[in-house]
Amino acid sequence: MSERENETGAVADAVPDVVADAAEAAQDATGPTRRLKTGAVRLVAAAVGVVVLVGGGLWCSAVLDDAERTAPTRYWMPESAPTGSPAPVPPVPGAELKAKLLPLATGYWPGPDIDAEGNDYFVSGERAVQAFKDDHSGLSTGDREARDKDLADLKLKGLAGRSYARGNGGGAMVSEIRLMQADPKELGKFAEFAKKILELTGADGQAPKVDGFPDAKCARGSVVDGKKQEIATLECVALEGDVLVTYRAYGWSPGFSASDVTALFKEQLNHLKSPGESV
Image 1 (cartoon, helix red, strand yellow):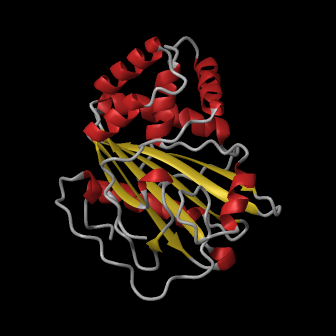
Image 2 (tube, rainbow, N blue to C red; image 1 turned 60 degrees about the vertical axis):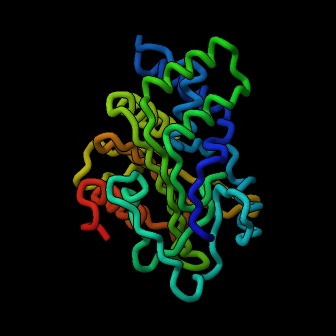
C-alpha cells in the first residue's frame, strides 16, 4: 500500500463501551482519584490506540479470509511475502513527528491499514483536534465542552502511525506503531490510564519487560477467530518526552514470538532517543 499523508480523514473510530467500563474499573481499583469524564475516556481510548480485545475473534476471522482487502483492518495475516523491494519512504526533516517512527527494517514490509488513516500516516495536531471536535456522537453539550477543554489542555501537536509485516503462513506477524506528540504532563496522565487498561485486559503473569525502559508497559492476550484458530497479541505503551508510543503486534499462535515483537517496540523507543541508531 502506498504511503498516505492524512490531513482530512477521520482520526478515530467509535470506541466500544467496554473501554468506559474498564475506565470505571480502573477508577475503583485506584481509590479516590478524579473520575474521568466519558468524553475524556473516549478521547484517550481513540488517540492512544489502546485496543480492548473483546469479541475480536469473530471480526478477525472475516479479515483473515480476505487478506487482500484494502479497508481498515484489525487482524490481517499475509499469506506470503511480497516480491521485490518496498517503495522507499520519502525523507522528512528530523523534527517532524513522522521522522520519529521506526523505519521499515530488513525483513519487514508495509503492513495493513491502521484504521482509516492508512498504513503510514501523519495527521497534524490542528487537523486531529478539529476531527475530534466534529465528532458529536453520543456526547451531551456538557460532555463536548469538557472534551474540548481536555483537547486544549493536551496541546496536541500531531499523530503518526506505521504498520509492519513479516513472515509467511503460520509464522506471519503484524506490528502497528502509533505516536502522539503533545504536552508531556497531559500525556503522562494518558499513559497511566493506558497502563491500567492493559493491566485489566492483559493475561496475568505474561507481561514481557522492555529492557532499558522500565516505565514501558506491555500485556499479552489472545483472541479466537471463527475457525477456532488462536491469534496471539501484544499491546504496549510508553512515554518518551513529549511523545506517547502505543504498540500492538499480533500473529498466529503458537508461532507468535513475544520476544521478537517486544524487540521491535524497543527499537522504536531507542529510535526516539537516538534517531538513526536503531535502523
